Amino acid sequence: MTLDRAAGPGPRTVAHQAASQGSRRRPRGAARGTTLTLAVAIGLAIPIALAGCGAGPGPSGNAAPLTSLGPVPSGSAAPGPSAGGSAGPDGSLGPGASGPRWPGTTVLATIALGAADGEIQKAGIDLQNAANQEDLKAMWGAADGLAKMIDGLTPNIARLEIYSETQAAAAIYRKAFPELLAGAKQLRDAITAGDASGIVAGSQQIEQGLADYSPVRELIAGLVEQAIVQQRLLLQ
Image (cartoon, rainbow, N blue to C red; front, side, top):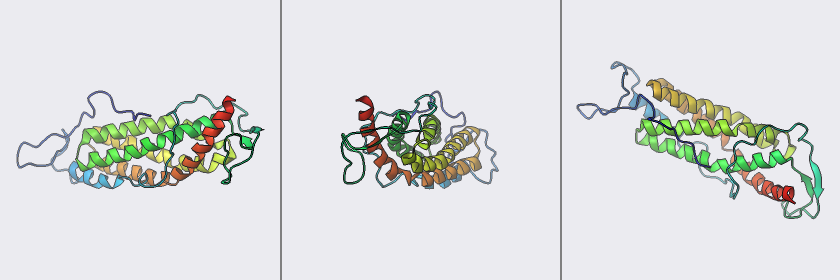
């Protein structure tokens, strides 16, 4: 999956270089007497970096980056027939393993969310780097890309919720994704409006979303391995 970057000229309030004394960048139209300057807001935004997508196992995956799988078919919650074979020592399905087949939409949703894990991690790194460099345009682009990606991935949560083995992961996504989406939109819109306090608030919400997202990284890694096997079974 390629993180969707903002098209066009970027935020209309991209900071400009002060004419004298090497002062920090400030958005056009910002009041001179603003208590919380944009530079301070960017400084406060820096802790979002890697808060929830740092070290830890993510999907190893060779899965395609899917985001939109169409409507959830009615009645797809019921597992299908079992495949022949025996389960692996860790209880996961191997080639020809025995166990219930997952709903097809759950298989595809799991692979899509697993493939997106690295992109969510990259979004956190991009925001970190942009904040460190006090680059508002890059921050805007990273926030816009994160918002669009999370918005596109969110329908997959319902496809995990219909199957018991993926419901624990779905519950984490259901908590973290709205926080990430709201924070990314607020950060993006605050940069556009030159709203320093909004930049801080949006950054803090992204930080919380990343922290709440972190526990699913190990879960989704294991689920993706099983989903790839299930995908092979679906093609048999």
